[in-house]
Image 1 (cartoon, helix red, strand yellow):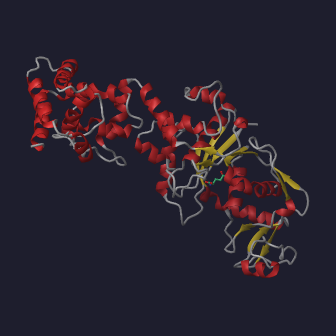
Image 2 (cartoon, helix red, strand yellow):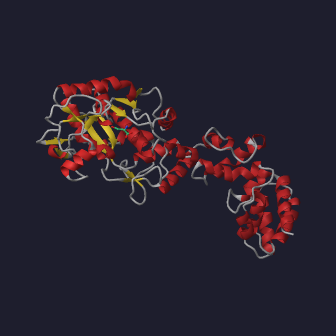
Image 3 (cartoon, protein in one colour):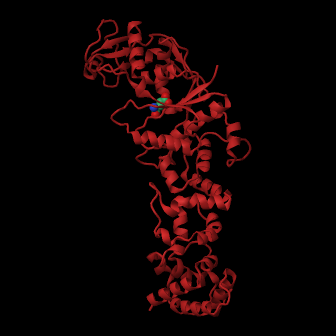
Length: 469
Ligand code: GLU
């Protein structure tokens, strides 16, 4: 039997990191089993679907390494509407489903409770199809439905606790539960690896498989992803869109590695390992069933490590979208003609060790390309104290006299300027840094001045000095 798994997102919003994690787990499982990964877009919620969300899913998958053309699909659930209806009809004809025209109020009036599920009123009343008649599945009265789940063992659901659930609405349209089963069936899916949120649907869906006469798949419900307060990640509260991480400058390699660590870890005391190790070592049945904490701080630190591990040339390439701007990434504050690729290449190794996400490159290098630096006023006020004006005067004089404009000479020169005032280098360089870069933190100062060049450095220190009059 060839293993066939599927990833079945609904294109109703930005692509969620939890979805990306399930996609990767499916992807790796399929590879390990010599199986097939199928992509199915569940687009039957016409009111909430947008084609751009589908495009977003495809490009996000591509970004994390599930590239277009390397899987089966995408199929679209809406294209199988005929199959869904045919399955509903089969269930009705075989007596496994029946029509019902009860409203919620009818059921409440009979059961006396708004919490109780459907009471089976129409089970044996022989109501036929008609407008407003929903089709309900006749769940078995006895026994239990045992779900075989690679992560959770064998969750068992008493059939008598499962209400006769709706499989097609009053307008005849099949509901998600049925459409999802029918698609899995027609696509020959053998393993359904999906989010834990769907576990309550699973006994119902397994009953549908059985009623339609097909052996149910093996299930694997991967743990819910939570924030630091143990709340399920939500798009209203948390940063969940894979695209947002991408635009902030997370590397695909760091992101997909981190996603695979949610509820699982490679052997040894390692977290950062080559992707091939994850592909080899990952075991679906080792995934921890409890909620997985999506730790953004850890992800950031992780990303920093991935950035530092890049060959410098790759780092320079990886920064390009932030240096130029793209359709989705805001342009930098300098004009394209102000950018100097050689100057950037000169400071790139210094920046590479300091940033955790690629978007931070902009604030680290903007001083090199702007005609005058963007002054952070709070930093200015904090740094420019009594004596700063004189210190800047002395720095200008000393720098003017320098024979060789290199980081080492700049450093020893400024050190000497400070020493005359009994200042340590840190205190001496702070006003110079703010004058030249506009900020209190950034790349190593003397290397920055070397790349910026004598003229521009002196002009900036003089301009700052004038402000201090
Ligand atoms: N379309 C469903 C979702 O996005 C997937 C259901 C499934 O994987 O079975 O949650």
